[in-house]
Image (cartoon, rainbow, N blue to C red; front, side, top):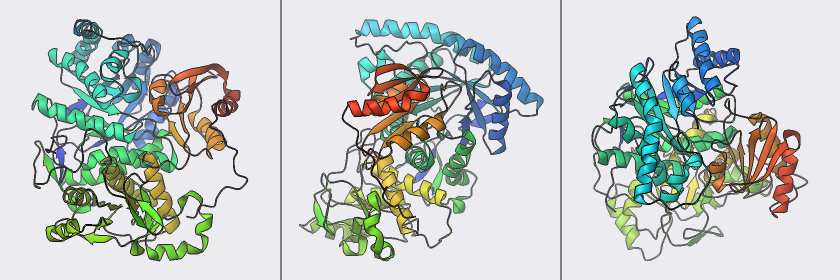
Length: 612
């Protein structure tokens, strides 16, 4: 296929050059480093806690703080919070998070440095209505939106504050859903409608975001947005805010965030990020800092400190093409690379088979005596026994030799070569005939450090493997960045789960807490996991409120959503089926609902042992 301009360069790292947008005293985009931000988890009317949580975030390196303002009353209290922070010498920029109420946005914009609006619900009430819009009716709807949105744009202009036009996959308007569907294209069109209104009014201090809980959807949406911005012209060079919504907690939340955010950063996209974890928000900051560090090192001229090997390049404003190859994947639609099925180590891979998990012989020998006790984390292929062919992706003669072989074979990239991991496997896939399956590696420099920080390894592995899996490349994976065999296998399986490529355990979509949340998300998520974590292949959404709940549950089997203080609504798919359940009973009622739909199995008496 022809190389589309979805990033500055899909082969060599160049950061997309954008205009600078000021958020208070913090510059986003332009020549600034990639900024790290987070969001408060407390009630916006609890002034003292809001101030303390903000100070805690700033102390650990948060550069921009977001606070929800669901009502005009909440928005008014932002003035008190802001004043209290300034009196304590804290001038961190505050962002008001607005859903549903333009009146709250107009109030908040008087006191904060930035306002985030969601095009899906800022001027629309979501009723999940099915309706065909004629072009004339659609235009009438856009004029209605213009009338609702214009006062906020004008106020932001007057106060010289910025805005985020933040689309969420889970809260697209009925109008967008009916014309474009629940798609990345719908997400992009929703944001561009509001951007055109702002531009018509001469306002340019805005930032885009395209958030989703599914990393594949999120990645496609941001790529599609950037391709549209390139097509619109040089003055559509607005910064991007990156984030995966409802990523969850623990390793799973960090892996899913790294897949979505890390893969886009590796392609040069992103000017500010928020890692959304179902944990206290201070825990989001070290993860975000680790993700942006390699790329900020380049911006500072410290390429030798780039860490994961992906970030070798420069800051560029136009796409360049150092390689003549066309992309081996469609950046705007996920499609698995077609290969032929082969049989290795009593396992089939390639074709329609699952992506397999490989291990080195040395590591296999360390765990061979307890493989039967490893449950879902068993190795499936021993690399040295697989017949895998190793090649440098610039060795065209060797690749031609492989392609001339009438029999398909497993192929991988050589270790210890000078190419970044993502680039190396994209180059291999671009030249290798599709019939040959590919073994992906998380790094081309196997770890020799038994004391290496596992979180750093996790983020690097999830970024590299996740980016390639979401490109549709890969039939088996090998984690080399972690020495401990059990831990490396667990990481490999969890990356496949987070990428949506191999579901081997219960899948949770859990939002981070904020002031809209109607129950304690961390405690509730823990209780739900304790009751359901043995339900392989069942997807459960845990949502603190209805802002993104019903939409983000489109891919979930069951949903647990805050409906009112102390009350929970339960969903099947995105249809509410049980309402106003007392919180104390809600987990048990969720289990009953799963049983009603024949998705329940009894928990094993003894859980399988998982080695570290």
